[in-house]
Amino acid sequence: MNQKHHHKSWNEIKANDSWAIFKIMGEFVNGFEKMSKIGPCVSIFGSARTKPGDKYYDLAQKIAYKIVNHGYGVITGGGPGIMEAGNKGAHLAGGTSVGLNIDLPFEQHDNPYIDSDKNLHFDYFFVRKVMFVKYAQGFVVMPGGFGTLDELFEAITLIQTKKIGKFPIILVGAEFWGGLFEWVRTSLLEHHRNISPLDIDLVKIVDTEDDVLEILDSFYKESNLSPNF
Image (cartoon, rainbow, N blue to C red):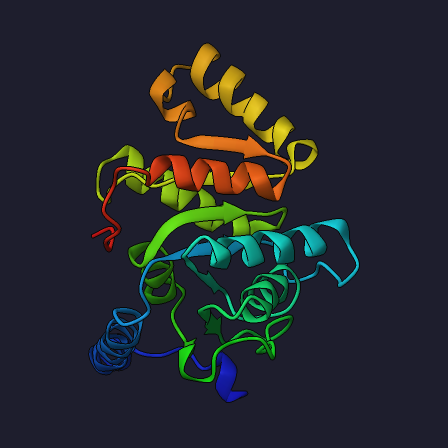
């Protein structure tokens, strides 16, 4: 029988789970130690499949460049596409450029614009997601796929339930995000009352790099920057 399809016994599963705890702890400790030294950053999310020359690739690069010029660093998932654009903009601006990589069977590979001492690798999505949120002063969410939506709605949920402090969640590209959040407004809020009107206000939809910086600067004008939880 192919070893990959071997059905583990309950005792084998329990033993593997016990040892996995140490690997999970190691990823958290390493992440906390490195990320605690980076200073205020903004996390930029978006599709790994977006190619250089795409309007959203170029816009993500411009946003990251301006974010650095306004005193923040940039955190991305460390891979290609929008992630590469974010790291590239931060790198060209001479600012902090962090990559939180995840081992995947396709798409993911390190981009060359991450600071050498700020390139972290994770096996566990949930550990990586903690790093994105804990050390971010804001989320800039470009068009993306399931992974981007996962990060977006987790951040909204954590703020909605007050598990973390409130920070700006900025969606870039009204043509991309407009339909989704019209559905959120009409179906989740108006028709089914599954969220409150205040939850809608947790998200801003914009189209330019200046809009992104205006929201970030306005939010933090009288706030101290600190980890979120």
